[in-house]
Structure formats: C-alpha cells, structure tokens
Image: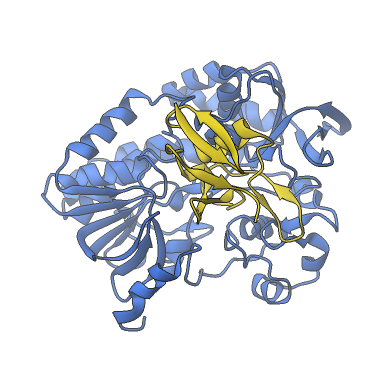
Length: 418
Length: 78
C-alpha cells in the first residue's frame, strides 16, 4: 500500500509539529514521519518518569485532531525511491511515500567523543541518560557523574535528581569565563534566565572534562581532569555528551547543500533543492523555541503562505541570537581531541580502535580499510566524532540509511532506478 | 502493569516503559554483544547509536524507541 502527501514532514519534534500545524489550515494532505513511538522529539518526551509541558500536550492534541494530518510513529526512512518518493519502514511493514513538498525536521544528535572506557555498560550520552530515565530507566540512589558540554548537562542532571539519583559532579569542559559570559547575556531571553536558575546545581564544575571511564564488566568509576588536576570518583553511571550536531544525512542524500555541518537554508527555510525545506536543529543547534519558529515558517512557506512566514522573521532572529551566544560559549577545548588512546574503540558498531584510524587521510579511505562507520548506526556516532577529531567530512549516506528488512527493500522492485 | 519475557525471565513493567528501561529493570541493563565480544548497553537513548538493538518477538528493534507491550519476548544474546 503506497501513499501520497502534498506535504511530507520528516520528524515530529517541535519543528515538525509546528510545520504540520502551520500548513494544515490550507487543507493540504500532510504526512508526518517520526522514528519515536510518540510525537514530541527529544525535548518533549514523556514516559513513566516524565510529563509533557502544556504547550507540547496541546500541539500533540491539535496534531491528532487535524483530519488532514497523518502521523506515522516508529517509522524510519530507508532509501530514496525515485524523484520525490521515499521508501520507509515501521515495525510491521515497508512502503513508499510520494510527495510534492518535503520539510526536513530531522533534529540533532549528541556529539559523543571516544575516551578510554566509553563502551562500558553504565556510560551513556548526557541527553541519552535523560531520555532513558524518561522512558523508565531506574536511577534511584545511583551515583552519577554527568560530563561533556552545554546546557543539556544541567537538564540531564535535573531529571536524574528528580528521579532519586545522587549527582556527584557535573563536569563542563568550557571555562568559567565562557560560561559566565553566556550567563550574563541571558537577561536578553527572560524565559531562559528563569530556566537556568531552576537548573543551578552546586556540583557544577567548569574547566573539567572526562579522561576515562573505569571498570571491568561495567562502569565502576570515572577519572576527570578538573582544572589541571586528576580526580577519580566511584559511580554507577557516567552520562557524557559534548553538545549537539545536526542530523543532515537524509538532507544530504536528497542533494540539499550544507552550510558548515548543518543543512543550508534561506530566509524561507528553503534548502538548495526546490520544494525541499528544513527547520529546527538539522539547520543548526538553537533550542526548541527556535525550532518552533522555523518549523512554523517552513510550514507556511511550503503551502504558499509567505506573508505569514515573513511575520515570524523577527521572532526567529531573536532566538537565532540565543543560539549564537550558546554555541560560542560552549565551543570545545582542543584538549578533548586527545582523549582517545590507541586501543580506544572509535567505531562502536565494528569495534575499530583509534590506532587503526589515525593513519588515514579521510573518511572514505578509513572506511574502506577498517569498516569504520559501516555498521548498524552507519557512522552516525563515529562519523561525528571523526569530524571533530580529524576534520573528516562524512560523505552523503548511501541507502539503506537504516538497517531494514528484505521485504521492505523489495518494495523498490517496481520503481525506476534513481 | 505489563508482563514480558526478558532473556527467558519474566518481568512486570509499568505501561509506557521503553524496552531499554526494561533491560535495566530485568538485570544488568545490557542489550547486545559487540563484534569483539563486549557486552553493551543503550548509549544515546534516541535511536541513533543502535547499541540497544535487541530481538523482540523474533525481529530486530531498537530498545530505546520501542515501548513494552503485553507478552513481548526480548532477547539480548544471539
């Protein structure tokens, strides 16, 4: 059973939801795809140990109430299937979706950098731990160290504490000067100022980064470098993430140009490919407020309502200012490039160590020689890490973009070659 | 509450619990064995890293993006 959408939206986080709702008033037939069980993206994730903010709940209800919006949860894009058609798969079946306009709201993922011991059970991403806790992971009375960079560390710590964990240390790699400089700018965005006060934690240390995760079968302790000195903390979990990187893979496969590491868009959220738009974190990290505005603009533009889109430009500019301040404050210390040791695994899917990769000149050569980036995650983790470590630009992905079933791939049988 | 079987062991979880969380509720939290034989556990929590891939009712799935269902059988070892 194949499907057609006037407007296809990939991702049901803040950007994707707001894009669908903005476009819906025209009566266009809208399909929203998302790989999570419920709409809301990473920021609006509910579960047995989380509750949704009102705005998210209302947007979810409006999405459901709109008869011309169809939401496919738990669905991933597997391949391009000819011009303006995608092969997708959910838990039960694969099928093709054709479209006229497409909005990419594919979000961002955490930058996870390799360090000794990072593959031990007990080590997660920083946002990763928050997501797992919201989904019901028990952390009551566990000792946690949270490390890496950016405001997500504080948000993750808050969720962990709320669920009974003992947070021993929040290790921010940025300097005290950089973080204070950022904090001083916060009054420009009063909501953010209030939010940051609510997240303050006495265990927050700047100029501190992880050196190694220690343990045999699972994590037992963390070694940190705190303003030049080495400290070791016995703990049950380490949540470590170094900020967010845009998910550009699908956009790249569709031929959309990049601007740095994000999808390039103009003032109308249009990518370099006609009829293809992008909004939210896949166009650069900026937070949910920016994603909501960008999504609304993209939704309006995709159905031809440019006047409504233009009205939102000032609001977008305001949140772009916040994103700029944030990204410069939490820029990464070059010392982090030397965390991995020769035997540290960099590619976690194919278990490829740093020593095998360090002699290569680029991503493609390293892949061909070592299978790095050729496992289940298709380089989403090691590709981001190697871009940071060696400046290797990951190439556009090749299908299948995600592991898929043979029955799904057989749906391509009767389509002309791409 | 929902009943599931995790590597042959019975487990009860609250509705809305992800399979990734159920792994920790059932035991050591591990989801798979890597190509060099290391045990691994969910890492990114958001469907990116594929560390949490498990076999659910005979099909491979990401534990962090799958909600527990009544009667589900989950396997973390080949």
